[in-house]
Length: 262
Image (cartoon, rainbow, N blue to C red):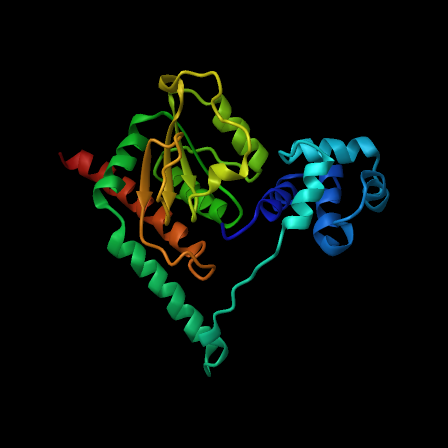
């Protein structure tokens, strides 16, 4: 994973909840004081965030954790990481070096993405009346981009920035629903500790496509993968996914045009 569970779920809370909400206040305080809060007890955490004990407990549940003990374990094990490529430090024009790296990652998608899978995905988009597209943090940018492009083409697709709302949608979706998961590392399902379709027959699951630069092992929930070669670094993320989303929209538009001429 490029990003650990803590920044994923916490930034999702901040991005999706109303500013000043209890959960947003707790998440913001923790992210602003990562080193200070690692060894706090629940009572002191509540005091620091100016909320009640029950609010901290509910926050833990709302972000997908069992309890405050798991939150403290997550805080202690999380390390923030930002990549600065060594060769770019020494170049006279680091912006050009970074741009070249991004361009190479986009070209990788061009050369390695399957036109056959693109066509199959777009056929599913035409077949399923109900569709959604999701991603986490930067990957959600690709989902939103695709949502906008497809709307211009007459296809409505649902998305939501909140990881919690994404999970709820997936778990409640039936076999009549198509879901696209944008996941640079393919780790989307690993951020949620519980099963998605417990007790449900597989034939009743929604059809899930994953768009990813890394799929060595396909999660059991995923029916198909639109994959491509990827450097799996922060320079390529989310540009590869955004480009893949653009290719999906272009292929979908082409398929509509082709239909009129057939």
